[in-house]
Length: 246
Image (tube, rainbow, N blue to C red):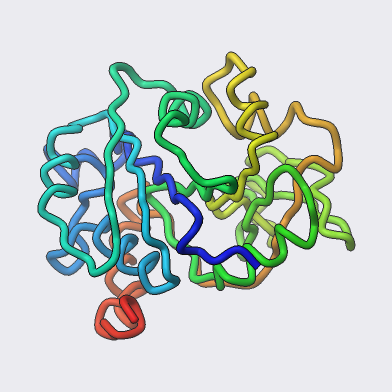
């Protein structure tokens, strides 16, 4: 199995955080404070705990703040680089923009405003066994309609993406962590649209995408309601520093 130390991790950290404007003023969403620590610091410590050694931050809104944070962040064994967007590019556009900085054969991409407590070593092992161009980490939640659900068959193949709705049904969602091989990065490069989810994932042939499913703790800090939950959800991880950095 590929060691996580050999996989570049790209964090999509360029969002405006429009829905958080009333509670997180004047800073990008990834620097929103959770118990007086930037959310991004938590993510980086969590990744380092799995052996990740190289992180690329794709930044846009208030980019200088994230650059300052990255320059002053000290996590043993972790290298942090930043790539700026000159204009909002969307999730797919951000990957195209940062690709020259991605050095590993397999790349992990993750959203900078969410957390899912999944075993990343198992995610990587499952991706390599599947042999698909890409793998999406999927988690089971009670209200999948809020995010749009993902259909994954018994072989782990993603067969459909379902739109957001108000039904409040339980199901699997795209948790915002991906593993991409070079073939998928080539697909993204060849796609003109800005959205990874709509312009890339929903356009590829069935069998291209694999889903790694589980029932994991999930948090999206993109709304004031969920941001308010962050200390209670992340508390166990934030107090157990060894768990995060061992």
